[in-house]
Image 1: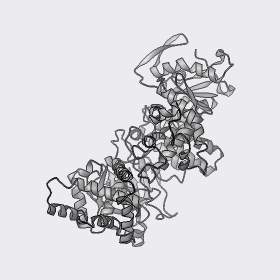
Image 2 (image 1 turned 90 degrees about the vertical axis):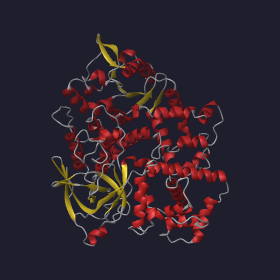
Image 3 (image 1 turned 120 degrees about the vertical axis):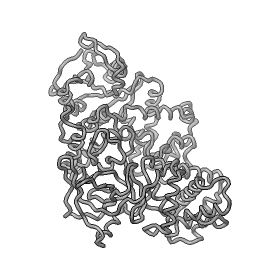
Image 4 (image 1 turned 120 degrees about the horizontal axis):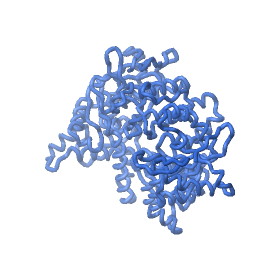
Length: 631
């Protein structure tokens, strides 16, 4: 039975947070005596929320049970009502005394995962304590001993880990409205048909597991000695970027930012508002405007929702960027890393410079690289970026021009004849890279986007792995000695022989002040290991790491500039695109001229231009600052 209440009267009610599911598959329920179709997932949730309410509020009369559900309490066909209710979302979810997060009808693995999270919570202690580190995992049974009882045996057999993986992969954690709901609610209980767990329990454990996975994989090729092999498979970053626990960890972070914002300075609040506004790009939504409107309750952006056809999706994203730039003067042009015609299909006809949240949420990777290409270049006298209509005007510098495009340096692409020909041609023309480092090292660092590269065991392993990988794609079964010699030299590699191991190392690291003894000593650590099993594991992990590094290049192409610099560009970049540095943007930008304006192709990685090196161009008078009008 529907009833109308005023939030001004502080009514006691709970709110439901759930994924709608397929709107075409429905079940009928009765509301005020009228049959109403709802999605199967909502119908299932409505059958179970009552008992979870009773368990939470023992002693209350069932007549006092009041539930707010968006599908039932908002007329979804009335655009004006939807607009009004969106503006009330913040008040609704902060006013609810409890929000129930429905994780779906599955009642075997999800309950197992929730019970496991409750069991694991005490194992970590306060992982936010600065004194906490992953070495402490040596002691708890979670990592070091998994044979104490049936529960830990299940962990060892990965049954529980599989349940946790399923929990983290639920669509629930990746919907923009749900992230807002969980962030705003004062109290949240995640529920399945038979089990529940608090937001604190789920958040703390998944954030800890995500942190552990990140720390264990940081600059680490091999399995740490205190981590079992089965657990390493669970905690290692399978895709090379983030752990499976990251979706829940991100939701937890949003909640924490929302709390920290209450006591932050004015500047701090602006930064946190921007952080929360950006969550829309990692979340799914049924409407492209929802990526913006679904965060208004937590971002505090001054935007009024408008789902009418009078306002295009492009207009919404222009308004979104404008609101962020007005509210946070120091946010810079971060949104460009999620924009560009070179990476996205752009079926929505967005301006080239606005973030394409809809396509990113569908799996198209945005581009972001370490470094700050504009560091120290633009002074306070440089005009700030401004938006007029659908044009972004920003100060910048044209540095070089994209002159030659190669193939995508993926695992598969590296066997492409175009890629191999590109490397051979570049090596033949450049005995040394433009910055003075060895050419082969420059090629490796360009395809793996490595801004720094020191001499150590880890990098030596990666260097050898890269060379082996390259040669496996070059040599054919019936190559004679002369063909092998010619191919080695063509790639700037030393000839094979007793000193080849040393020479390959020297080819990668000759710019560093190291001698033969140091190279041989370091090589010996991996070439003549105490344990051949450990060595094989190191080599195997080095190969895996290289595969991970190359996997992200699926929509990127290797390129050379007219000044002999190497880099990675979006897939749809073209020869003649201008390589530019923009004020307020940390990446290098590709901007082709289009009549009197420019188009933003996307960010790119250029080895040797990622740390403010362009300042030398200005000092030498080789270029000057100008205004780019980007449409």
